[in-house]
Image 1: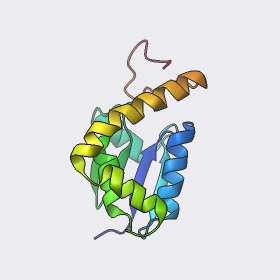
Image 2: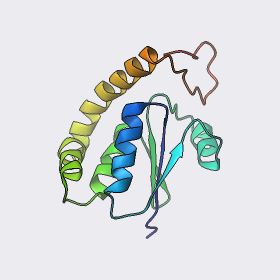
Image 3: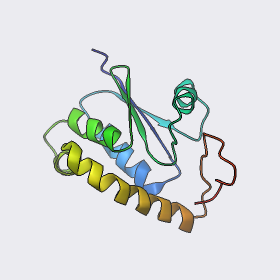
Image 4: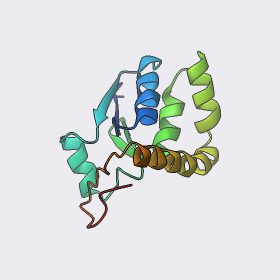
Length: 133
């Protein structure tokens, strides 16, 4: 089993960045944080698979990619059970059904936040007219 977890997310989103930094800090496994705005092999793979990074983060665990609600669910389940952040994270996202219900709400808040901050979309799929939130 590969101990490394790779998380691809939008570092320009303050909420996403804070969540990922805390997940990395309190994890028992090694986490590599990858800014989706930077070119990388993993971003190329994500784009080839047709995953819109503006609509969901990607987590790679043991060579398998997880997207959106599934990504945050898997990340919550890989964290230890101790510590306030991990307990809240597990409570909110370790149940796949709850993660599936909460993730669209969190994504909407993220999109509103980035719109207010005037941050452009990543648009890794190159969709015409999809530049602003």
